[in-house]
Image 1 (cartoon, rainbow, N blue to C red):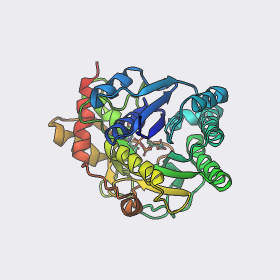
Image 2 (image 1 turned 60 degrees about the vertical axis):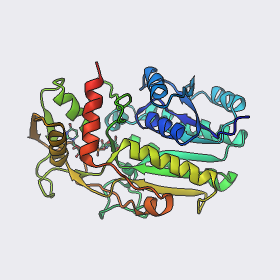
Image 3 (image 1 turned 90 degrees about the vertical axis):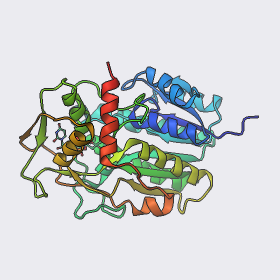
Image 4 (image 1 turned 180 degrees about the vertical axis):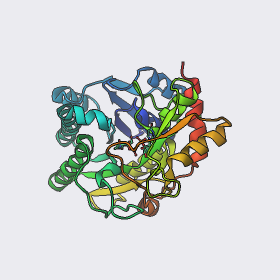
Length: 339
Ligand code: UD1
């Protein structure tokens, strides 16, 4: 008899999803992945298997298809869901708002509906610090107001959390929403990591591609911010630390340790780093020089965002363990492993 709890990871071949699938397997959970491969690659499944020695069950399903989602839940008895599957590019969401709302919200609704129909009680939601907009005070704790969203992408995360409020109120389900700050780095094996399509928007993939000679130089967006070196401040959280938080959150629900049926936790290091500090950390730990230029601010960027992570520390018993340097080392190892 198989006593392992079976966890559905949607978007499990993506960046954070794949690291979480590994962490779940290492914690003794059985993992089943749904992914539509719209922004991920099938080889990631083999890589997860190489790391853990266990091949996760995989279903290529588009979550927008309610019938397929319900059919999956009818055929697979799962004990909980970690829901990563979503589009996540802020700029693209401004160009294609309907696509973002349709994909991110319809996918969420179909999963929740199937959970209701098939009596699945535990749900972890992939949210974002973007729900806070430009917060009034630092560090940002979970009581900070949800400000007007700065992009359709941010709106899908805000609306997603609101849908979950109604879901837990009506159906006695248990949900944890995890608000990530800036996920960075790759698995220490260098077998999985971030796989940006086209020109990266995010800082760290741009840094590693510049170091690899794929980009001529990094544009540092803005050097006149009111910060210690003039560049913007973010909270860069190592992806494997982030993955561990998902395992802790899920276990909390399964063991019924949650204090309300909808809990929200910030996942960040609690340390704000400037763009130039990230560049420096990357150069130091990898012993190389990065070509960069200080340029104009990027439209829509906020000055600073870093987490108060004490709630996650106290309630989940989770503490980020990896330094920015170590994250930058793994990011470079991963980049160098790519063809
Ligand atoms: C972005 C998204 C956010 C999302 C997060 C994680 C926006 C406005 N926000 O956050 O919703 O949750 O990614 O994926 O896009 N930078 C450079 N040069 C570059 C790229 C970035 O200087 O080539 C700077 C940015 O100006 C920023 C910092 O690096 O200060 C981090 O940027 P990025 O990685 O894009 O993340 P965020 O903008 O914080």
